[in-house]
Length: 195
Image (cartoon, rainbow, N blue to C red; front, side, top):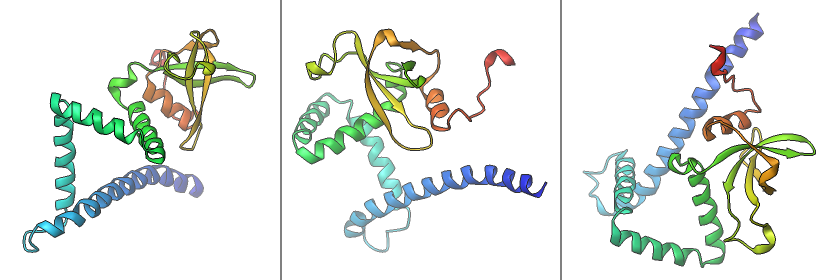
């Protein structure tokens, strides 16, 4: 009985504590980063804790607006091309951009949760590229797609090239399928038909 009560407490506390810790870390990092520059230009009597967060959020919002402007799009595209030519930097930039794209709601519409037939059984994955024509020809042909397979309980996964014929599309939103995989199916998702 005591073990069960303690375990219920852990299940209630850990997700909340972890979420709060990540949010605090994010805001603390933002405050440290922007605060470092603001202390040099803002007089001490006007500087206060939290101004870095306010400026950081405002700056991100302004960048989001400006990226849609025609002139800024041109400059951004030029800067992006330059960054993608720097050997080590381009790897980090591309990986970060693709990770953010994966969680972008607008771009999730182009993704598809699928079952992949393997010798281990059927594995849930996500089509991340439905055409390999822009990649090296030896990677695959017109019938192949790139499938990302996340691993449970860790940040990581593998990308495989698979024939479309071996995939079974799932009528499952990407975020729900991802949650299912990352928790090894223990998310407690209820079937809508069981209401």
